[in-house]
Image 1 (cartoon, one colour):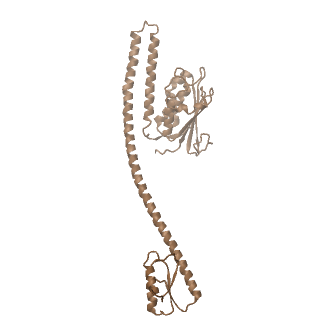
Image 2 (cartoon, one colour):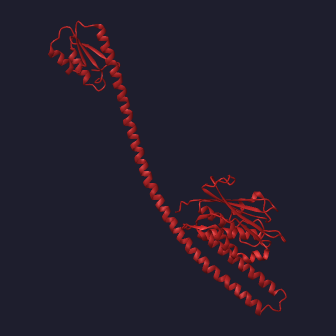
Image 3 (cartoon, one colour):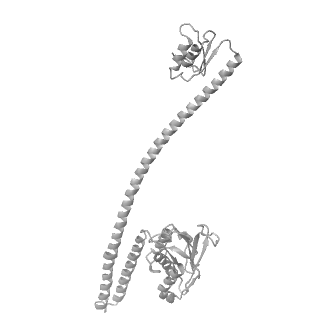
Length: 370
């Protein structure tokens, strides 16, 4: 039995020609399309209990005998219509939930598959990185041994050549000295490259006093201070910081030695180192006694540089002055920046030509490497 239209409620008379109401109700209840439509049976003759029972068994939700109250019938119809609509809404909601669950299950399965795949990729990359680090360590050893040893021999033989063979050559000592200086510069370059490559290793942090570090650096540079008649002003209560002490020693060695190097002739270098605490990583943030960052400032009265070069000076092999005027390899500030970044910190430079330079370092008070 097929209905041409969709119905929300069906009222059937039990006594009908050809097929009675019970047969129609059974046919409707047996169809997937119409099985949920509520049916009300009406009868003026079949009032006995067996007929009423059969009506419910045939799929009816109510059985009304004639005569009946029209108002009550209308109320029953409205109630059944409301229930039918609610039932359909619940069914639609259920279908949506089933679809949503299926979609989320597919997404979850795809996500898990992607996570497994991505984890495998990361493990592979990690293995490749470990292999790369191992190769870099081997390269560092080769550089340290196979490149430095020939340089040492070159320097030695050039000295012997100058002493034994070039005594009567007017320009001999000059050429020998130039060769030796070139070999020494090459040796310094190799040492700096080794230092830069070693920064890739994961550091072990400890707590140390910055005053101790700077005192050690000042002692190492004592001869340079005497030669230049330099003055170093250091704040008494520099903080204790978390990090690798030897690397911070290298940071201040680079910054202080640059301040001694890049200064006008007949000008006594004057270097000032101070520190305070701030709440943010803003270099101009106001001082805060309970701040979560250290701000360390190193300023000098050297030759300075144009503001446009404040980023370039931290790039490896970048020099603002020729090596004849100011010696160096162009790696020191690149090493300094990399060390600070390995300690989750920041460093910037500020300068005006002829008015010196200022380097500001920001470091977290506590370290994530603990």
